[in-house]
Image 1: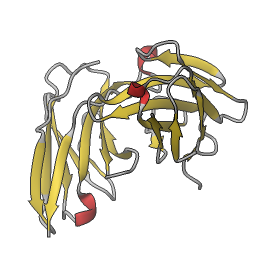
Image 2: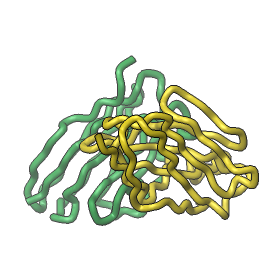
Image 3: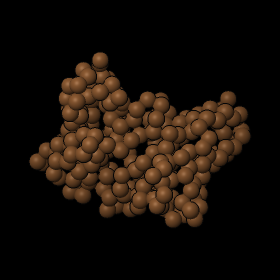
Image 4: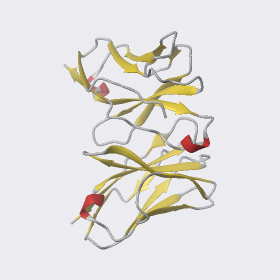
Length: 112
Length: 114
C-alpha cells in the first residue's frame, strides 16, 4: 500500500509570491490534514479536509488555504508569501480523521 | 484538549529498554492516549495508542496507569534507528473539533548511544 505522497519535496520562493503544495493520501483515506513545522513553534495544525469539506481549521491567517478533490487528494495554497512562512509543511491522512494518522515526508518551503 | 507533559530529553544505550513517560493529569474519560515519533528529516510516524488497558504492537508497548493520569511508552530494545522525538498526544475522538487534528507538544528527544 503506497504511503502519503507530498510534492514537491523542496521549494524556494520569493516574498510576495504564492505557492501550491500537493498531497496524495493513502488509498481509501478520506481525511487529509495539513501541518506547519518550524523550529520555533513546533508542529502546528493548519486545517483538515474530509470528503472535500473543510472540517477544522487552525489559527493561521487567511493567506493559508486548502482544498480537497473528489479522489481525496488535497492541495494547500499560501498567497503573498512572507519570510516567516519558511517551514516544513506536512500532510497527514487517516481513514475518518479520528484514527491513527499517516504523514508524508513533507515539503520544505524556503521564502527568500 | 487536555495537556500532556513529557521530559525534554532522554538517553539510552543501544539494545537496552527505554521507558518514555508522559503525564496527563487532566485527561478525560473519552481521551485516547496516542504516541507518535519523528525521525530526523521525516514526517511524524504513528507508534501506538490506547484507552485504558496496556497495549502492545510490533514497535512498542504502552503502559497506562490505573487512574490514567500518566502513561509510559516502552521500547523493549532500543536501536540507533529509534533516535527520534517522541510525542504523547491525547485525542478525544468523540469531539468534532478534534477531527483530523493532533496537538503536538515539544515531545521528548530520545538519544540512543551505540
